[in-house]
Image (cartoon, one colour):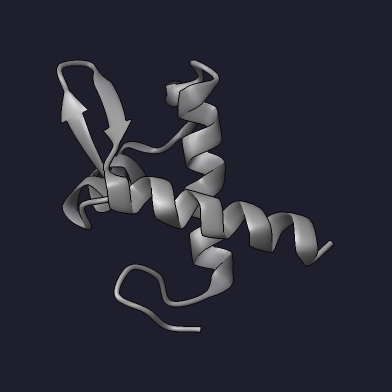
Length: 72
């Protein structure tokens, strides 16, 4: 499924997993290129040393959570 943010459900799920790491305080597990990619796409914004989800990022994260837990 291609949309404006992701080429596939797997890409959206990878974003969601990155969000989980950041929310758990383990942002160091997310590669810097990935942080930049999602910031460029408008899914999160940098505020100093932190990353915050945008409204669209939160929406995509919710969609991915549904995909993660319904696909098995």
